Structures are given as C-alpha cells and as structure tokens.
Length: 229
Image 1 (cartoon, rainbow, N blue to C red):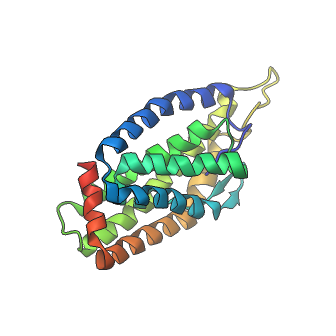
Image 2 (cartoon, rainbow, N blue to C red):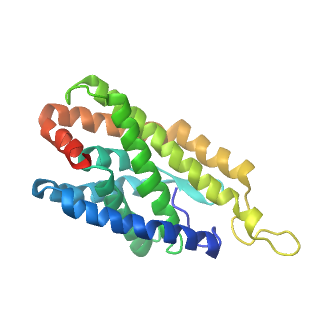
C-alpha cells in the first residue's frame, strides 16, 4: 500500500501534505495531554510493531504493495490520535531509510494508513464492541472485523489516488505522466488483493493480540478506551 515516488502528481502530493500537517499537529497535542506515563513506552512499541508488520509486503500489479499495517491494534491500545503518530513514525522511517514508499508521497501514505485506517478501524471497533466487558469475546470479534474493514478502506483510498492520476496529468497526446493505471485497474488490483489476503492477516493479528491481552493484561485495553475518552 506504500505509494512510491513518481506515481502521484505534485499537486496530489501537496494536497495530502497540506491535509496531514494539521492532523499531525492536533495528534501531537492530544497525545501530550492524554497519554499516561505508563502508556508512553507502548507508543514506541506500537510504532515498531507497525513498522515490522508493514515490512512484510508483497508487490501488487499497478506499482504498489500489499501488506498488513497493525494500525487498528495500536488505536485500540492507545487511542486513535496516538496510533496516528505511531503509524506516521513507522511510515517516515520506512520512506527515509528503506525506500519503502516515496518521500514525496509521505503525506498521501500517512493519510491512507495513519489517518483513514486508524480512525475507521477504531470507531468501527467501538461501535461493534459497544459496552461489552473488556474481556468479552465480542471485543475480539470486533477487533478482527475492524482490522479487516479498515485495511480495505485504506486500500480503496490508495487505489483512488492512483486511479485519478491519468485524469489529472497527461501529455497533449493523452499519455499519463504519473501513474498510468486508471480506476478500472487500480481499484480491483488494490482492493481485491487486500480483501482476499492482507485483510485477513490484519484481522487475525488484531484479534489474536486483543485475545491475548484480555488474558494477560486487560488493563491495557481499558486504558486505551480511557485515552480516547
């Protein structure tokens, strides 16, 4: 799902940097005010977890990759704003040190994975889990569903970014200047792969970790809801 350099036009990259800058600023201020001292190490662990799981990626036709992100799990444990920061850190390190995702596309990649996926997954988890006890199986199921759905939403928004490039940037002869694949190629390639494979990886990992924490330290799950509140 990492968009490389050269696949989005400068205007598209600029728009998503402009969108993410206030989001990063608000997230940073919110985390400073709400994150408890006990949870601060978890922020670093969450970024590291997201970094590692995103490194296990598979090339997808159309110029990008498919992989799990771990964003919803971090959001469940720390709240969505802290998860936004954690996933952003992972994406920036990957782009700057490993060339996984373009530097010009950091804003777009963070919009898809550190914002859209985080918030879609977190609030879907809250809606499905409702007021059920922290240790209930309903929360495990909610975590798995939220992870699966949120990853596919992020895959869809990534595909749309790719697919609109031939409509926005072409030569006078009609040749695409950036991503050459339209929506009819980008959406099936991205969403199909994530629905069939990577969404299930995200769902299973998220659900299993929540189940493990229910047995070992349910206070971590309760603390995550406290941060969001």
